[in-house]
Structures are given as structure tokens and as C-alpha cells.
Length: 190
Image (cartoon, rainbow, N blue to C red):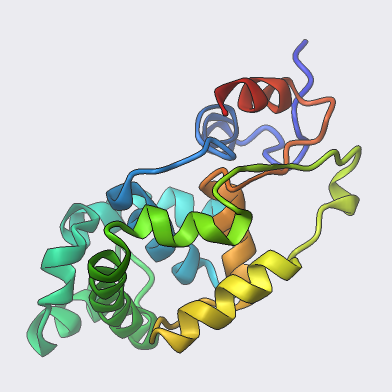
């Protein structure tokens, strides 16, 4: 029996995500953008809901190609609003288009989104040492700072809680509990 964080429970998709992706440091701009999109759509919903629709999001949003998304016009936004396979929230769909534009601006300013976003953790993952899920925060000083800066740059649906979820997903923080088999594996990857 493997020790694992308890939050995936027995959900096969959540277990796979936990075991293979969650907390792994990401430095690829395309993948970072995918998580920005997914985490912004998560606002007010469960991660399992988003994970179940992930492939549908991928198809609907041109494989999370931020250059294509930045060029979406009203007809494409309307098409997405009518797509029952994704979350059809007009504000979140429009935010995704706007966020793609902002993402490209950040890339132009910093050379990559990766260089920009990792500054909030001093370009090094934070390895927390939580013993229980209850200890894990929903926001931190770093996520507050990130949220504030992203909003200043025009990003939407990037509150501190969403930013912290993004930090967890993209491996900026290692929030696997210390008894979880992935905790040490993630530390070794850094």
C-alpha cells in the first residue's frame, strides 16, 4: 500500500493527476498557460469537475494555444458559450481570451512567461512540510503578490486562491503531505 495525499480519494482521474502532474515544477510556457486557463475556470467549482472536462477544454480552446486564443473574435466566444462539453461561463471565456493577450505581453517583456511567474517564489520551488491536508493554506503572501501583479497586468480570474492553486499545480509549491510518496519524488525533481 502506497502512502498518498488523501484528497484524490479513489477517483481514478484524480489519483492519476496527483501521481503524475500535481506539484511537478513546470517551466514550459504552453503548459503554464494551460494551467492558468484550467485554474481560472475552476473558480467556484471543484478540481475534479475541471479535470473531467480537460480534454474538452483542450479541443475547444485549440490545444490551449495562447496565440490562437488571443485572436478569438465574438463568433468564437459565442461558439464556446454554446459548447456543452466545457464550462460555459461567458466571463471566464472572455477572461481566457484577455489572459492570452496579457500572457503574450508578459512573454515579450520578460522573454518568457516562465521567467516572470517563477519570480514569485524566487525561481525555486517551495517545499512545504505539511502533515495533514488541514494545514495546507488556500493562499499565501506569494499568491497574494502574484495575484496583485497579474491583475495589474490585466489578467482576470486570478485571485489569490486561484493563484495558489496554480502554484500547487505548476510545482511552484510542493504541497504533497510529507508522508505522501510523491513528496520526496518531487523534491528530487528540483
